Amino acid sequence: MMTLAGVDLYIWTKDYENIPKKEGKFTMKLMSNRGTKLYPPPAPEMDMIDWFRCRYVSEELINDADVDQLCQALTSAGWVWNKAQKLYQIDGVNAFSEPY
Image (cartoon, rainbow, N blue to C red; front, side, top):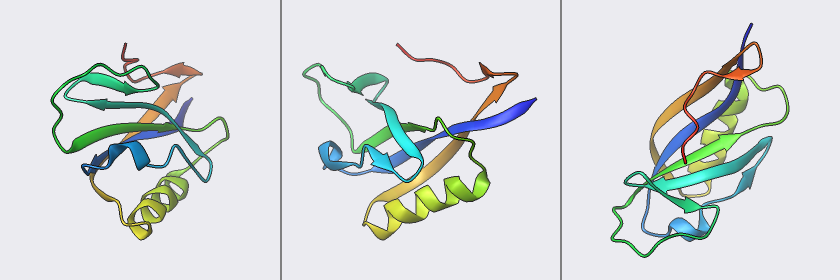
């Protein structure tokens, strides 16, 4: 059975350190920039662009409305995101890549 596990949100900002680590049912598991892990620390010294991939996952059962709510909460807080990629599990196994 396929279940929704989280979402990769691509957020456009220069203020990446203040992107929320927890929002509703979701907790940030990973943040990267140009393919390099920034969160959880430690993060290397590097030149970054203003587009960050933030992986939010949930230990609870979630659905599309929960992802919509996460996106709306971030938008309402002033964050600009430009892509959302839902993450699924099939029979409890991640159907998405585990970076790093």
